[in-house]
Image (cartoon, rainbow, N blue to C red; front, side, top):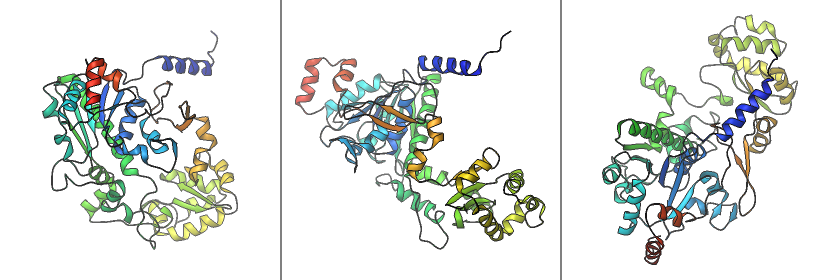
Amino acid sequence: MNAVDPSLHAAGEQAAAAQAPLPLAGVRIIAVEQYGAGPFGTQHLADLGAEVIKIENPHDGGDVGRAVGPHYFGPGDSHFYQSFNRNKKSITLDLKQPQGQEVLRALAATADVVFNNLRGDLPAKLGLTYEQLKEVNPRLVCGHLSAYGRTGSRAAWPGYDYLMQAEAGYLSLTGEPDGPPARMGLSIIDLMTGTTAAMGVLAGVIGARASGVGRDIDVSLFDVSLHNLAYVATWYLNAGVAIGREPRSSHPSLTPSQLYRTGDGWIFLMCNKEKFFGVLAECIGKPEWASAPHYRTFKDRLENREQLTSELDAVLQTRTTEEWMRRFAGKVPAAPVYDVQQALDSDFVAEQQRLLDFAHPGGDIRMVASPVRAGAHPVKPAPAMGADTREILAQVGYDADAIARLRERAVI
């Protein structure tokens, strides 16, 4: 028997995946969304094949993200907007008008999900809850992403990512101990809340398909920011220990697991298993460190972290970050400390094909690919405002005359 070339087998699997439907093909999501967190969540679903139909208000410029600068492909088409809305469709619809509510209900009857990321008190006012829509579609999942939830004293409060980082303690954990409070450099709460909402909505769809009954699914920026505290919260709630900022972005209980100086910059090492310290010691020419009484265990190294940091700095500064990365590769958990440009231009990103290039009327766009690999499929840019209004309304029974009347009354 002749051996099969593994590369040919892999190529065959990739070709088959590219031809197969994406896993969410056939799922329809009506999204009353704008800005970051909500659109980021539904973009996950659109990338996986769901039909995501954005509802945009025809009277206020639609998704506010269209106007978030400073970089644009054209009017109402910012780089920011494109980052959160590829593979979607857009219709214009005024949900405050009775005729707009009629259209919403017609759309909901054909959908698996009606999703919004509005202020907590607004979904009920705009007819977006399960109680209001179950009559037209008992299997409907109504997803709600808000700042502080739809109940309680803050339901009507607006809220944004940085506020959540501040109140949930993140600023007390970020930066150097002697520096001012510092937020994370990304809108991490928006991104994680969008991702969490996508997970919640999919759970709702699976449940509805099994039982025939839909439900409301609620996610809030505040709840996600608090949940992310994870083991840090457990330490405080059970041991009364509230940690703060550590020097060099150190792990609070493991070392070496922090930043170290190299000959031309910085490197991050994470010896988060005992075996890795011994491998590190061998790689840097200090094998005796692995058996030294003051470095033998995690506890020993933590007690002598300042000394270990100084000694590692001295050794690591004898070579460049790139040289150490070549020596550590696959042996010691390590990463170069890059800026955004270096991160996106790295050889590994190119090798793994993590960047997408696709056509746009204003010129080709390059973006980061979905982290969920489910086969290669064409990518569409984010839609122009209202680009799909006529097509979608026709699908739910509105003929040309009815659409014209809605347009005359400024409903669409």
